[in-house]
Image (cartoon, rainbow, N blue to C red):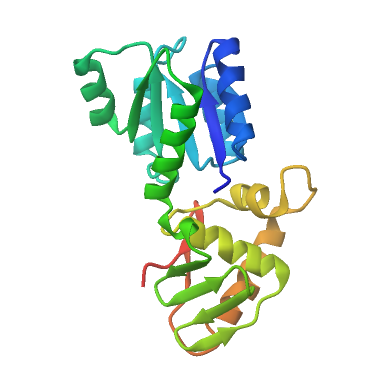
Length: 228
């Protein structure tokens, strides 16, 4: 289960240790030394999970967690707090702020990777299967086949990748910039309106049987899968 994981840690040696172990486990490790750079990273590429140090300069990890939970596009990102604060009251405070798990330093890198795997499995259960499903849509990753209810849906390669990204994050709203990064890649020069073109093609294919619109447009925010 490969994922984009943002490591927010102000001690470079610990940050490098965590990133190396995540990469060894097959994940993509993004890094930030403070809350401000973490927010910039999140705006550029929406991570699948955040490993968040509590004791950060300027803005604490707890405050950053609280801020992320208030954002419409970031409130569902799994967050694991990694900190030297091991008191039970600290753990309760961190979890009540919105963290999904709490790991105290010093930690075993293998245990941390296992915790990451467990949280991802809970947050994205569809990835444990070869078929992604949501609201009448199904995508067989092995056969490269898409169905809506009982109808086959024929998609081009880009539309297939777009739909896969939506199905891996059901209900989450993505901006055009975030979709460009996730589907086309950060190093590819593509205009924002290209996203609209492929969203339109994806909609036409998904809605060709007269069903309701499978893609929801969120004004001033972006696109998401419809809940219905």
